Image (cartoon, rainbow, N blue to C red; front, side):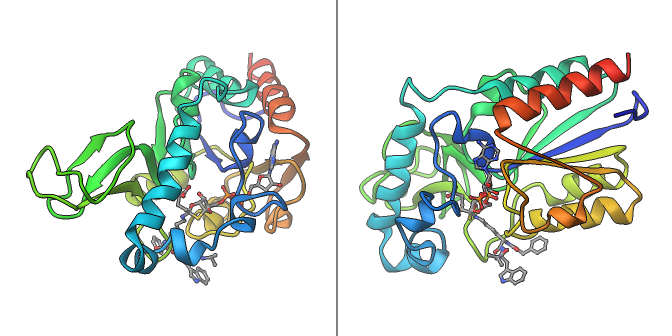
Length: 240
Ligand code: BJW
């Protein structure tokens, strides 16, 4: 694929990129929403109803992410390589709350749905690193008040993070690539239309055609650990 080597590339990633690292997706047959109700664990109303249930859900996932067996795969590594070798800017916008892009060496990563290894105090809004279980017994290290720590994640009905930076990056980019996302959750699902509206070429890299596959100029289907490295090689070689 030939694009201006000085152009900015925006890559949107979703749960599919981390599947081969051992983390569950949401909407696949064996995904997270087949096991728990999203209304119970991923809404502010669910948290208000049963905070312990929600904390347990994220405590389990945090422990899973910190399991030594969970490591970045070849797709995360390829995107980090693209960031370092592409002459223009590369911005990875991830819906994932894991830190596998960073562990693979990615630095220009925006976590629009938050980060599992951070907590947020609902009383003073302080965001802090967090590798431990959260519970109602803990106090915020910044304001000292008890019971207000929650996972720093974006639930349904809440405003995703970094939206101004993301829309500005999309408007001026030369290529938009979507990796491992079903394209069902907004506003991320609308980024392809935003890019198209600005005349930007769009590519989907996913295991299978996503809900919005027909909106992309080009689609490549297969496991992320195979198709993302091949796509990145193609981009870097094609523009040498
Ligand atoms: C592989 C693979 C392999 C597998 N290789 N691929 C009606 C219309 C429009 C919008 C709405 C509406 N009603 C409500 C809304 C808004 C709502 C929404 O979109 N709802 C939809 C369900 C309809 N959105 C919100 O509430 C958001 N906030 C918001 O909109 O604020 C207002 C606003 C408007 C405009 C601008 C700005 C703001 C907040 C959404 C928060 C989402 N939170 C979650 C959970 C929290 C984090 C966590 O616990 O992890 O985020 S939900 C969950 O879904 C998680 C994910 O980030 C997100 C997306 O999922 P993703 O990544 O796409 O995973 P899957 O499982 O769906 O797909 C995986 C894909 O990978 C599949 O296609 C597989 O095939 C593929 N795959 N293996 C490659 N090896």
